[in-house]
Length: 275
Image 1: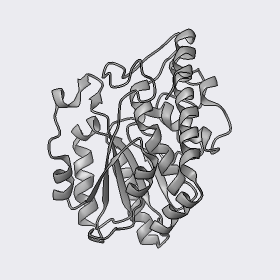
Image 2: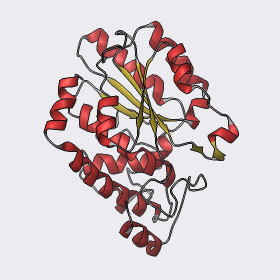
Image 3: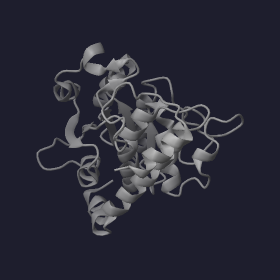
Image 4: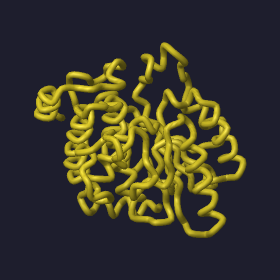
């Protein structure tokens, strides 16, 4: 995807549209937390802006794939696909129900989901492999993976990073949702990730850091085309600073808001206060 494409998105004044879609998607995520099964609400709310931006840039390219590696945030993926018009059915109406396609981890039987994910780290090599295949076929497609910072504790993430630089997979974009939390608490209290930028650079990546809730910044950051000062022929890592539970003040920044099953009354209250 070229910088011209990103600039075209900007000229189309897409940012206000994306912000409106994000508010709608966050409402759907809250609704999914109010289903009998509940959902992984904190990480879904932190990653939704990254997903929507990725679909805005790469979603219309059939040779590109967008893969959510932190698959427990499937609620965000379904919400993004719905508000972008990629799937026709409202996921909140049957999320987690018996026989529903809207399962607790991404279901590859749905449009826009090329691979089922859930085991942490597995989406990273899927995206890198996709990118390498597109390069070999000459399609010009991009492999985009969106993972989590807690997920970086999985060795497979770094094994894939090693292969990506060794093979020069420059059409591979690794977006990290750096919300600072994981299932058992704060990443910094469990397995800290100091000097994360330097780690990716040591693995041969171009690295960009961005505000993961600022659409103007995200759109520029996830554009795979090298910018002045970057070395061509390298994969791209985007470290996106996000807030767990973003948009719902009652749970913003709370690592305990990893998973929730809430009453409908609470859902209505949270949706009225969405930011």
